[in-house]
Image 1 (cartoon, one colour):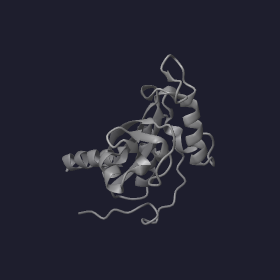
Image 2 (cartoon, rainbow, N blue to C red):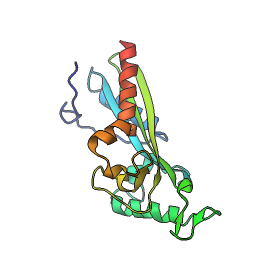
Image 3 (cartoon, rainbow, N blue to C red):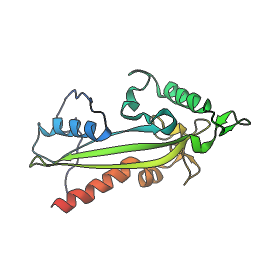
Image 4 (cartoon, rainbow, N blue to C red):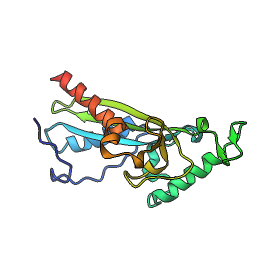
Length: 185
């Protein structure tokens, strides 16, 4: 029974520097900055893609990976090219692609909530998948066209909005935060 609004809708305009080293730190930085402007509950998230072969890059730099103004088409192509070059005996010569189990990845979302009393709560959730052989789908944004989930045998850009909300890192983190906030009341 609460009104939910964006920073813009709340009349808050801030340039917040995300200089944390984890998703949790960046989410807290953003939530605390906005909370300083209001006495309401503030939620902020930080999310991104972790590719195991790339030592969990792009990670917290997902939006800035390969440069602030680099398109996701280029970021996606670069990510696929690097995973395609992987060869430790698990290389699929026929497909010229690293074996699926070597292209494991996940989307991560951390949500921070700052309560009116100043207490900060944090949740973190993921969706596991792998980097696909080629981009597919028109839904979603960012890395969605190259991130595939076994559950649906497709990229997250091919999921309906309802399917994605059900299994996504953001949907799961937000539902977890709701449970945490309700437990505090």
